[in-house]
Image 1 (cartoon, rainbow, N blue to C red):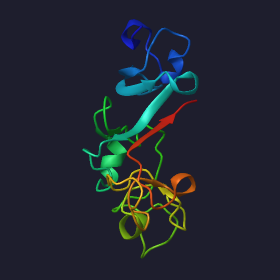
Image 2 (image 1 turned 90 degrees about the horizontal axis):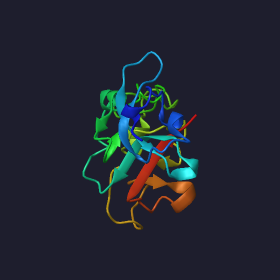
Image 3 (image 1 turned 60 degrees about the vertical axis):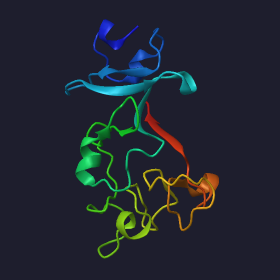
Image 4 (image 1 turned 90 degrees about the vertical axis):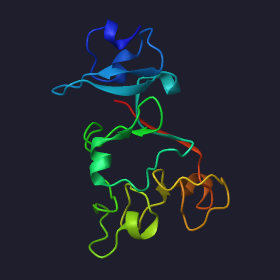
Length: 166
């Protein structure tokens, strides 16, 4: 069943228990016009709204600025960032907007890792929006698409997907 065949749904979680399969369609959050999202109905029981997907590195995430992340970019059927304005206004640091708690003079996205992210005052331990480097193991200084606690700073992931659910 496609979303268009049902009443307007607020998010992908409303599709749990239906015949809907993973794919792109429209959702209609309360008080907002409808927009396209990718609903993942396979992972952990389904109902997930994908707000970031990277695979192949054709779309640059690490050079995007605050307005790009606020409004979203890419295509929801492929590599994309849904948009902070659509994903609960999640604030983070970009090269042109600092929200990492470090104070003026040092910007984690611009001066350290090179990708917009939810950095802490210590610049964090991950960056799934970092520069796509197609080497897997062997990157240096945290450059790349990294999650230090999982694969370490010297491994750049080739595919990432971030999702949200109620």
